[in-house]
Length: 227
Image 1 (cartoon, rainbow, N blue to C red):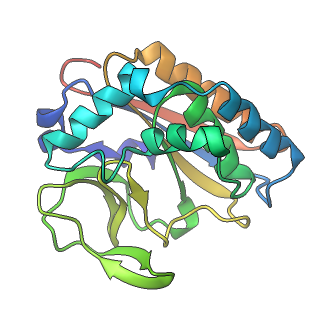
Image 2: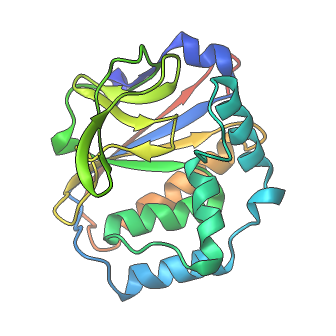
């Protein structure tokens, strides 16, 4: 499955320094947030970087501008999380708490998807504009669409994450019942590939504390400049 994940050339044209570490974990214990994951979030928030002084966050803002997004209105996911840290990070469920804490600790975007709800391989593309995006508005389910040229993650059924890493869809979101998941860790220069791998190792360690028999696969995907 990981071998079929791809990044289109049109995305490499925007940011040849982009690299992503994709990790599939099968056999998660999952469940509701608990004291351990709440403590993870509190610790990550306490030590969170200031997004205004974080060069990796600045790189993501530049990437958003490259395809016409306004990063002050729709912020890269790590920028939004770091800004929430002083008031406390959101408590969602055990798996999401683990990857949000890792995202804040390493100042890089991380997304998580329920593999049971995925349809075909993940790919990062520039949108045509007619792809369905399953989301909510005013608390109600709606189907939205990306802007033409927007960088999106998608599968065969539609967009799974808009504006590179801004907002994930409802269909593939990780819930307390999720047992098999795909995690997407995204890096731009000046973050190194070693730092990216270190974040992935930390996330896997957190996810497998209570699931020692979980099966883990990973793949590093780099651009034409080798990352």
